[in-house]
Each structure stands twice: as structure tokens, then as C-alpha cells.
Length: 367
Image (cartoon, rainbow, N blue to C red; front, side, top):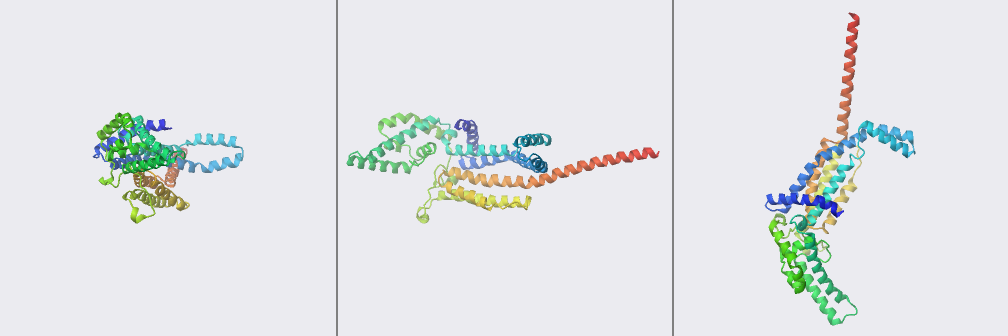
């Protein structure tokens, strides 16, 4: 699966990096423009999906007849359904493919944001793994001694103190033992204070990873992408907001990202619901779903890097508004009305021609 995403992520990473280059190396601006471009490109697919829905609505009476005719005979029903689709020129996957493509692009963008060194700076995955493994192994060694019931109490205490000391130093530069995203954490370290690794790692271990670390630093500097939103140090899109119920004392400016994602989805859900009601006044209420997805984004937003939450904001506002526009202009009921108007016009034209032929023949007979 990862290999499949790499096929998509690598070229998309180049596009995102190109956009950042022409936007003063601003990662947030690149993500916003990138999201806009993707959604504009996908407009034809959205229209195709709407037309597929119209085609399904158009042949629904015939499908109901087939169900009555074949009842529980699934084999004959499937064959008759396929023949009907072929006769009517309806694609069975017309509505699914655009949705799958949109999902694939969304997951790819998600990985692009989670792996800026790999896809933006062109750093080899092995180099990132080498550095992160050295840090993890060092911390695990201290933790193993501290938790060893057979170890001497003095050794356990010393190991625990060393572990706590190094954990504090690493957390100050964006490293977390709870996170499994080495790419983002290494980004935080080299952007904050790469020399901290000389204090964390033994001299021997540091020498083992020094070449890889220098390569990562060099490539990241060469690209020089700014991951700060509005240039604010407290809005670093590579960091993960940490929620606390002690809101007044522990509030972080980074909380605005998941809160913004929640608000953006609520807004676009309200607009989408309004558009659906215009297209189909009898459509059922989607109030439960309208609240569920934004709440999900709010909760998950506090467990993922802020860049992902920022993408959700852009995707909700840009993608949601574009999709609502497509639904407004190419809604199933409007398209169906246009199709029926065309059919009626064609029928009227045919009847007019037949009437002209009849009148002409009557004129000839009278002569």
C-alpha cells in the first residue's frame, strides 16, 4: 500500500514544493493553493458523479420493473440489470470512481504533510530511520534499566533520572516517545537544535549517524520551507497540539487549528445542507452526520500534526464550497429536469416533423 502511495506522493510532493518555492517558501500557502488546484481539477469528476446519479434516477422505474419480474432470482436480476445499463448507456461505477479518486488524493496529501523531509526535501527514508532509531534505542536502553526489577536500585534511579533528563531535552525540540512519526520529529529537531543529539546520544552512536544527520540538515536547508503559519512560532504546522482541560493555564495557540477545522466543517455542512434542500426539498435531514464529522475532526485534530488540521480547514472551505457550487448547478434533480426537457423537445420535434409530412401528403392528395 505504501508503495502505491509513493507513486502518487512523490510527484505530488514535487508540485507542493514548487508551489512553496513560488510562494516565498510558505508551506501553509502552498497547501492552500494545492488544495484549490486539486479541487478545481476534480470538478469534472464531481459533475460526472452527479450525472451518474441522474442516470440512476432516470432508469429507476425500469429497475423497479426488473425487481418485480425476477424477484429473488439474483442471477437473472444481475444479468437483466447489466443489459439495462448497457442499453441506457449507464456506467455501474460512474458514481464510485470519482469518490475513490478523491479519497486517494486525500490520503496522499495526508502523507505529504506527515512526511515533509521525505516528500518535500527529498531525504532518503533510510536516513530518517537511521537517526530516529538511534534516538529510540538510546532512550529504550535507559528505560529498560529503570524498569528492570533485578537491577540495583542505585542504577535504576540513575537510569530513570537520565531518561527524564533526556526526555525533557528531546521534548523541547519536538521529540515525543508516544509519536511514531519520525519524519516530523526529525524535522522539529533539526529546525530547533540539532546539537541536542550530541547530548542525547553517546559519542559512538552520534558518529554512526552523523553523516545521515548532516545530509538531512543540508537537504532541508536547501529547500528552506517555512512551516510556521503566519510566521508565528506558536503555530508550527509540524507540531501536534496537546489538549488539556486546564484551558486557562495550558492553552496553546496551536489549538486554533483543530478548532478551525471543526468550525470550517460545520460551516460547509450548513451550506451543503441548504443546497441539498434547494435541489431536493424532500431530502432527509442529515443533522447527525453534520455534527459527527466536525466533532471527529476536532478530536482527531489534537492527535495529529497541525499541518493535517490546516489541510482539513482548506479542504472543508475550498472543497466544500466548490462541491456545493457543483451541486447547485449540476444537482441530480436539475440535471434530470434538463434531460427530460431534452427528451420532450426531441419528441415534440419528431411529432412536428410527422405532422408536416402528414400535411404535405394531404396537400398532394387534394391537388
